[in-house]
Length: 148
Figure: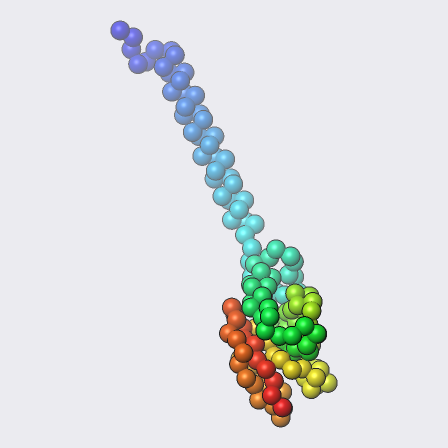
């Protein structure tokens, strides 16, 4: 009877251990690379398509489909922040809602034309002399009708 310590058995055992070590090293390297390239919550001035913050805004704004008539003037408000965050979120909202005229809540002339208000991660502030009627709670925001 042959001993387990024979040359072919040692060779098979060595190959299995080498293969396992290479597989472990590869999986560890892939995990490290994925960790270092994870998506952070970037400031809106650095947003690009496919980033997590853009997808969150897209999901939020997707909730107004069929609620606001096409061509309506809509005021958009979000939290202020560094790197002109409110401005860039407003521009992304305008891009993601091509059938609507999206205006900034900061623009006094536009506030008077807006019939709706979309808030994103912010409490609403109705334009002076108006009140708001909640139409729908969105994922991360709300849609209001502006009543004059």
